Amino acid sequence: MFFWGDGIAYEGQYNLLSSLSFDCFFAPINGRDSFRENKGIIGNINGNELAEICSKLNIERLIPNHYDMFKNNTGSVKLFQKEIKQKYPNQFVNVLECGDKIEL
Image 1 (cartoon, one colour):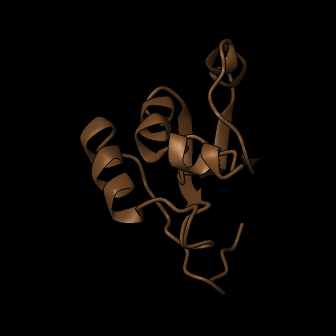
Image 2 (cartoon, rainbow, N blue to C red):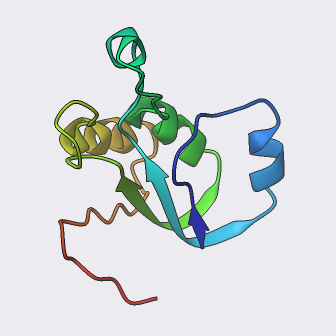
């Protein structure tokens, strides 16, 4: 299991992760932009960036996070699902709603 709470992609990250296989891979999709940064909100990777990273890794269940938590710092699950389907159509995505549980 991999849980990526907050963060952005960085050089060398793919090399660190590419030799591993993940049953569950939690990662943020809320992104970052100048509007948030001007308000002191440090963002994360966005759905497009996550789709690109995941298309190169061995992930059984991809679980996006950091969306619909805060009105001024969110990402679109629907847009992410579209992006992942385009880049990696065979990737299983498990979208959780507030209160949902998963069995590992």
